[in-house]
Length: 260
Image 1 (tube, one colour):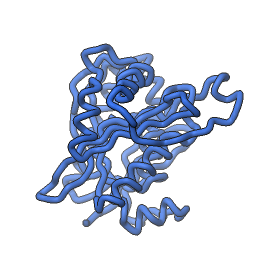
Image 2 (cartoon, one colour):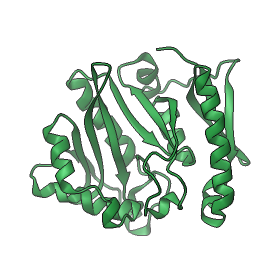
Image 3 (cartoon, one colour):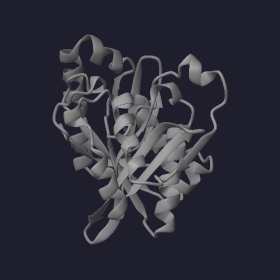
């Protein structure tokens, strides 16, 4: 459920340069910040808000809790849980979000890099998270700027939620795999640009899909269903989403044959 990098900053935040600090919470009381930030970022009602107790559990059971501050003002957070695949530990990054006034100011990137640094220090090689395939800037951020790959698609992962950002649609999710020590990730974080292979295929959707979600939910759900079917078909053939392309008319996921 990561996201919210896509809204423009407000005038208050842009009046001066933010002084961003990423750090772990210093007290149990500070965990409450995660509850307040969720409501600011996603507009959740109480029923969909992760309580502060779960932040405490994550921290004490091998996960991660990180907050972003502009001086003393909390502006974002990351919440991860310890997880395991086939006997190998990884981190499931359940939520990363930034309040609207600080989006597009690299706060999300700083949170992700702090997650990576902490995981590497603990000998962890993989961080996973889910993201909405219809959130195009998030897709670009995850695949192009961070170097994650996606090869699993989960229909309606969370069910329909109270968040206006989900527009009443099924919460379909791609699973991002961030192999944080890999040459792909290291190269991308150091500025390397990956070139698509000649046998790459694409899953495309309108560049205006977010506007469609707001204006015509039925049309948006029809597009969502088409995108789901394409991903499932390509993933079944051993492809992974490894890139993302923008133009004025449409945006496209780039999928290539992929092996571990």
